[in-house]
Length: 342
Image 1 (spheres, one colour):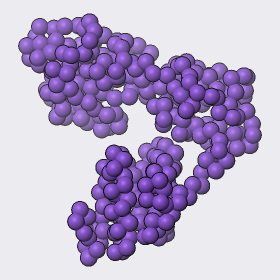
Image 2 (cartoon, one colour; image 1 turned 90 degrees about the vertical axis):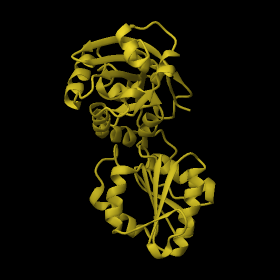
Image 3 (tube, helix red, strand yellow; image 1 turned 45 degrees about the vertical axis):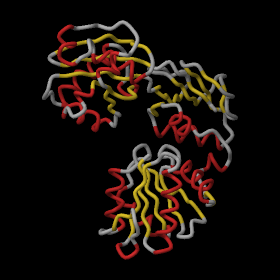
Image 4 (cartoon, one colour; image 1 turned 45 degrees about the horizontal axis):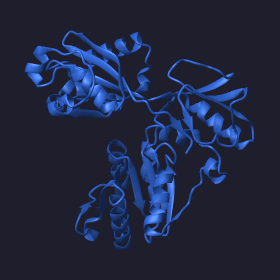
């Protein structure tokens, strides 16, 4: 997670650097920003308004942490708040680091989890206000994030939380293996409102919130210069032909020769799909039987890019063999993992 941290006072700067050190130690990538007169080694001088800084952060960071008064943070982020599925996590800490308060994207964005991490790392008190957390109830959006499930309907997601808070039963069904204990409030019996984990367009309840498992890695290859629109149409057409929802994609993968291919990068950015690339040696080491090509082997050093890249990225098994069309290739592999309530 890329975390941007901003402070406006000397004492706040000390806390910001403590936060940065703590989160870097947990594997996050932090950048600290401070007014020029308070900058110390490693800080970046803040040369714009709080709102301008926040706007840039909403586009480029996974989390923003304000070390200042909550009002400053609220006013700074107000113009940029759009959607809880895409907004970054936003937290505010007082300049002493006593309290860590998630302001935005507590569940999907991870603000609540980040506050808990800071509590353990720097001795702050997390101030969690989301209703399901306060009442110790199942949070469907957290469950979806932890299990790589795409939420198809945010309005129904809110209905599920409201029903649980009201003490009403919520149904649950899954096409994937499930581990862990079914949380209180969920039932496998008949219910009017329920959650269904499935890549198929199922509706086992009168009002069904479908969570699509993001199990598929897309293996791709293309001739130099293929544009994103052509790739998009090709990929969507083949997904539909095999009954795989676009939302079920977890990532895309190819050979490292394509790491800078403009069309692939544009497609990846447009859809928020991580794009992984592998060397010929890494792809050749992937076990299995693939659709080999002597020409591809001579050109890239590996007999089949798309199939091997898909399997490598998914750590699963090939489910759709290579499809080639007009200088583009497509393959799909799926992970074998189930879901967990742990």
